[in-house]
Image (tube, rainbow, N blue to C red; front, side, top):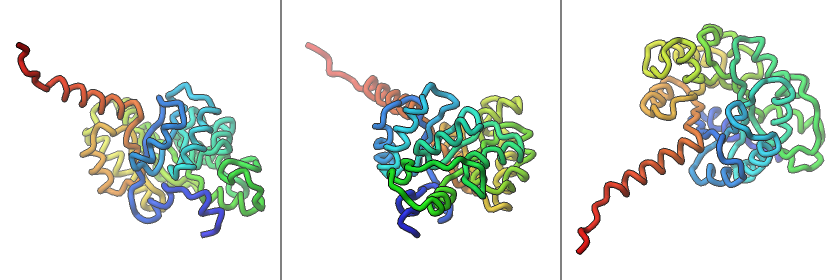
Length: 270
């Protein structure tokens, strides 16, 4: 591993390459850099800032990405759209991966790859002095090569049509992970909230098998409240797990603690 590869270091890619599970958390509430150290303290490999479902600015996103990288947590960004105005900019701002929603086929996936990777793998515009490089001048050819190697492209599978096209999406060069957005998929299949439905399990089987055939990883999204189901899909071969969001963690822990205190019995007063 070169000095630059060690400097950039993508935890998610390492975990998956080693046959392990990469665990990620969603950031859509906390807009300060403390969330990076919290993610580290909790033991997450990665966090991803959800620009599709939050009001975060690109500046805030970049600050959190840079803070995460300093703590050793790999930052991804879920973009609201996959044009260069989002994909390339969040990567230039410090992200080491982009999660692209609503991928419906190979053409969509290819578009994300074009904006996420430098030539010859894509058309991402060359930028110098990025946070990944610690703002140091590195030979351009080496910097482009290592950033291409370390950047992760995640295609979200959120519709029955996308599931049906999992094979062609997984075949796209430059896509690393196919992650099922289970909430949206259930809604589109007319089984909203029925996560245990056989249609959901069949979708996971199809996506995981497509990923296996093309040397890609499968990911789990939207099942934070169903740990047994997550375990089932991990056992089937999924390696990237979106384990929940900052807000859900606060609500779950706070609710449990309040319930615990309410259950305490006070001694009768005299």
